[in-house]
Length: 269
Image (cartoon, rainbow, N blue to C red; front, side, top):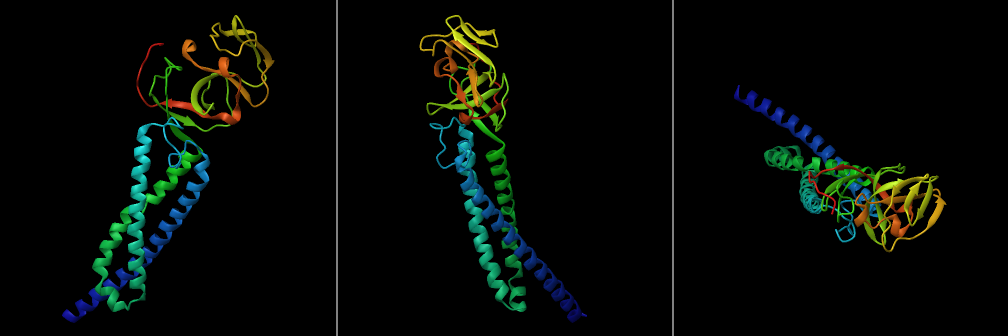
């Protein structure tokens, strides 16, 4: 009876070992496939200046919240740790694959512990790819720097921007001007009639602002051409916008602000 029990236990161990080796092979292939996909996305998305894993990203050249820097560094550390864990796990798997069945059964308990440890990291590349796709192609974070959009947005507010290709009147957009990233409200779009003179800014013969300020571009009258927009800050008396630098090329617009994450309030400065 004891011999039969031992044989049953051995058969169970053999079956468990075969299943574990099969699951291990699938897990290893999946992990490194996703890591490869993540590496390809990492290279491709370097052209996106708001990509949180952009190696040239810093607050000096992109107004991003500090928390995103902490997150990206933390995630890189986790990826590095997962890569080491899977390298050791893969090495152990290859070694066991070459061993006899008896040797595999002897090291089964130790290998199970290593499998369970590696399994913890298996979600890392999945999460990495999801974050890269969402952040690289759909949404990103930005941080308001200055008072030009008060009271809509206060200085240091954290916002979410959505990458879009079409913009409409009253959209709040993030754009690049003179190597600076600005958040402004879209006032006029292609096809609109624009008039800027000493009395203010008119769009389609409607006065939208009677303040120009020193250093403005002065008189202009035009139909806004395709691919260009006129933008202004909500805090009109303290905003460097199209009154000063003219029309904005759509190629210099990076997305639409869709959500404010911070709950701050501020009065016009």
